[in-house]
Amino acid sequence: MEKIVILTGAGLSAESGLGTFRDEGGLWAQHRIEDVATPEGFARNPQLVHDFYNARRAQAAEATPNDAHHALARLQREFDGEVVIVTQNVDGLHEKAGSSVIHMHGALTGALCASCDHRWPAPLEMAPGQICPSCGAPQGRPDIVWFGEMPYFMDEIAEHLAGCTVFAAIGTSGQVYPAAGFVQEARYAGADTVELNLNSTDVSRAFTRHLIGPASEIVPQWVAELV
Ligand code: OAD
Image (cartoon, rainbow, N blue to C red; front, side, top):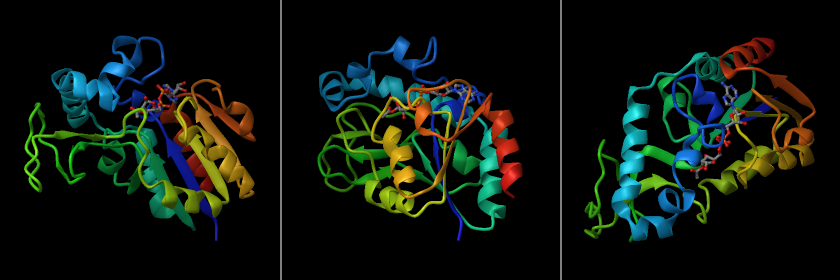
């Protein structure tokens, strides 16, 4: 049976009005990664980190999926085979389009206890000292994977990659590992590999096929080839 594994990144949601990280003027040009996306930054200044993710959460709550998200949901519904979507995005737009996805970098809708790892739905606004409903520690944080932390579901993802016949990376710069290495794992499995992006990336050479353009145009075209 055909099995497609798709890795998505911030470029997929760019046309929904959500900024990417590394494009010109992106989030990492406006905020220091060490301050807002590391456990050390959170320990130093939790208010700053909550402010950053509260703003992201509010934006994501307002955002709607674009034609690329809808096309991927269609692929999951109509493809004659398995379609696994692994996303680095925390914005929830795949779900709004009707897809089921693996959130390897967490989600803005989740809260995580830094003390006991309990998870619960995040309120729209989080604040320092948020009480964990399980252990009572005042250590609630966004359930987002930060730099220096292990992404979620890595064993499950490795199994999917080992069994895939097609691997696609959409709107991701290939600068953050382990996700940037998925294309190699898919190649070892003998999969066809395709990169869909506005530009070429650091890992473009690893792909056999390239579709260049805005996700809202090239993703629906690619999906139309497959269903
Ligand atoms: P980046 O900001 O690094 O890369 C965005 C990619 O999307 C670039 O390759 C752009 O060329 C492409 N792009 C931009 N607009 C596009 C469009 N309309 N259509 C198609 N492609 C477009 O974002 P990610 O690769 O997702 O992690 O970043 C990976 C991780 O780094 C994120 O999950 C986040 C960040 O630090 C954490 O916060 C843990």
